[in-house]
Image (cartoon, rainbow, N blue to C red):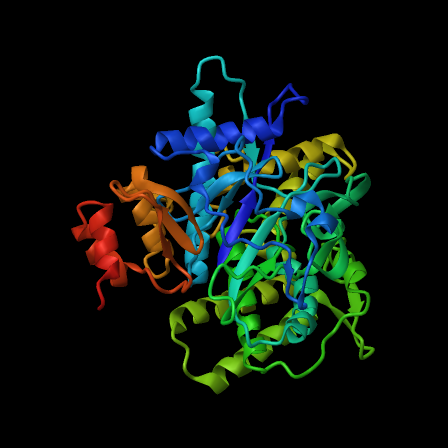
Length: 500
């Protein structure tokens, strides 16, 4: 699994600043400080195919919106692979951090937090340049003026799993999952003109149930079929409906509960149909009701709250795990199940009890404090400003950082773990090989992607591509010794060519 975050970007006092140029500066200044090239050749586009649809067809390039053509090189935009195995680049006029692949939800938290630390360091490096206008980054999903930018999740799945089963069982889960991992937003509607507070940053921006798009006609289930792995063995489920989370528990549950539901779908454990009538409308109904009393109608005629639906998935997961009895990561699974139950129980009895755990509740509690102190209505512009300030990556400005510093949030990873993850890749996926190659052989890595590293080897007339199509190959256990013993990239390639 892995997470992608597009950061909001602004120059205070200069609304006409060019966000693409500024985003390029943000990425480039960090890359330069790490000794990494930041031009377009740093990413290998050779095997990208963003128009392949999981429903069985290929969208014609002439019919695609330009925003869908993510395999087109732009020599003006910064695009780098970092030593921690992540991708840091400019996407749709935003700096985007795409985390390295991990296998555990807690690791997803760690390397997602590392992305926030990298964004902060980028801002500080840029501010140190003489004459540089101050650039701010925000980990959120809406600017309050009608624009939304994404936080995406990616999960590796077996190709054999029928896509209609994925759609049928995931839509009810995603419609209601926001009560656990929503980031909270002041304002109702895409332009935030409606007065109120809602659970999700993204819910109002979704228009359809299933589709290939990510920036228009946003679907609950995205059908991009670009596995970044052995295509006939794997599919990558690209999830665009999540919010940008700051709180560790919310991020862990976002990835952990989704992984459990996908496991149940793969095993055929979910046999009941919990489909929701009018899912897009239901998504927004749930988001617009922080009291959690609103109900959605299932196709079988039942009406349920979002909490009711989430409890059904939790109980199904408990039965599935009991029946399997072969969990390879029992401690990680137990942590997800325990926190899932704790959060659902807390939300059902006292929503505010979950303020240390969930973004939308922590933000709501803070905003209600301002409302009570100053007598503010939900349409007061000061609350909208606080909402934006919440997400500022700078600890001296971002309100969520103040809560963390005061010990008001339940953290799952330490500052030391986050700092280490800024420069070190996960050890148990191919991200280890990718990140270590960038660290050890920076000048000879011509380009890289999720499924390849391309070397420019001295003395060789052609570039040398090392495929990484198996996500669980290239781990520290498998190639760590070889990398340590390779004096140069030639040694590495000869070692990789030697049969085991």
